[in-house]
Length: 130
Image 1 (cartoon, rainbow, N blue to C red):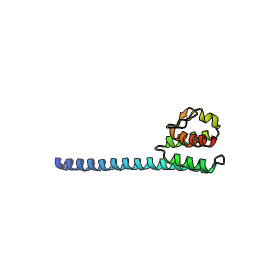
Image 2 (tube, rainbow, N blue to C red):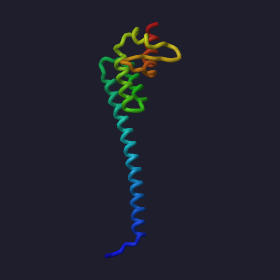
Image 3 (cartoon, helix red, strand yellow):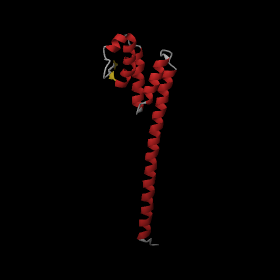
Image 4 (cartoon, rainbow, N blue to C red):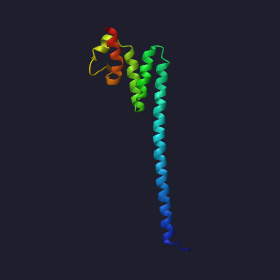
């Protein structure tokens, strides 16, 4: 039988280890890009839902599009959209019982507290009710 020198095996192991390291880096990069793409697609879905909604006025549509654009995850984009969508049908007195105009803004819709959403809608509602 032929005897293969140990150095040849060590060289091959070293090459395969480096190749493995490079492939793992590519997988991580691909995963990061896929996650970003998934978030961008989710934002587009919720922005399109808002823009195509017959129950929203133009100002509300613009506010939802802006709020959804600030999301940092698919779950956050969904929560922002659903929270604002649910808040649209809530009366002014109900909303303002959960918020105050001043240094902070809070709103409760289906047990979700969202400072940014409340600022968008409560500020506008409090100003218009005066």
